[in-house]
Image (cartoon, rainbow, N blue to C red; front, side, top):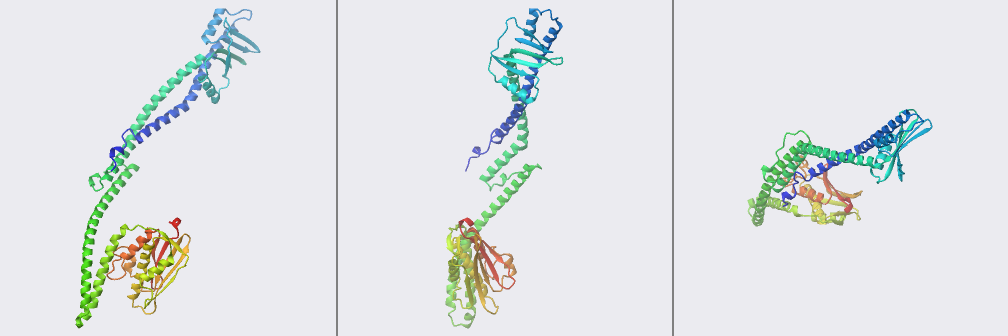
Length: 475
């Protein structure tokens, strides 16, 4: 038996781990989707701040007459506040330059044109800055505060990249915190609503599987009205039915064993009584001669009943061993065993194609056919109907299966037998019968992949139809 501790998932394993991982993954995915536009907006705001400094410098240049030059300390202060190497202001076809006293010659220059404000361009620019190597110079281009004016700022990219990395770090930490708190809150909620009830059901199933005869392990359902509540109630009902069925089967098995032993001894006793009745029948006493046949018939019926019960009890161990066999050969063998060949009062005919093969266990299917033919013969022998008594067997192929019909022109089945066909001890068509023959016949037919059914007829008589697989692919 499997150890329960090796099967039952813990509180933080199985579905729990998958749930937490799924929640965190979804939250982080959402944060990544939100992060890119947020990073692009941060970069655009940072560059706009530098452009505003450039616009202020341009105002200063406009305020100074053309004949005068800005003091060096003022230009250096403007450039330092903007963190720039140089500022260019263009308006009306003229350009004005503010640069450091010691000009810087950049090696690698990348342009950030702030006149393009669409989101894809901003995201591409942000990613380019974030993953760029050191030593690049940034050329920021943007519109001034006057019509047809333009401001350009030349500055190192390192401060922008450093601020973007700090911003990204803060976003990551905040995202992880949000993901952890949200995952924990959702886990506690979902765990209470779903995980714990599922674990309770799983544990109950494992325990009940180990000891289905213990009624205390039957699940006590809650009052939930959702799908889990329905599952609890259905599981409890199924376990209750299984407990009752196992208990009944145990009682029936014990009773069946006792009946089999009694039946075996009874059959031996009846056999001895039959031998004695045969000897009594040889006496010359008129009363004995009149009663002896009835006694013999009664003993034969009792012995047949006992033998049928024993045969039915042994059927469970029979496993079909199907092979391809001739259906005509099966019918011929069954007719011989059912004592129909050369019968003095019952005419028998079989119309079965010579080349019709079926994929069945030959021994089991012969028993089925013998049972059907024997039942038909006995019904005709007991019939008081005048005229010729006939049993006809016809067969043919219908697609992947073979169909065989056994028809007699006897009195037909009585209503009680027709309503309880194929039910053990219920479907007998003659007095004193057990009804086991048809029950066994149907079990054997279905075990071989076929079907057996009774067909209603307009004229008097009985017809049973068999369908059997022609090859292994028909199963």
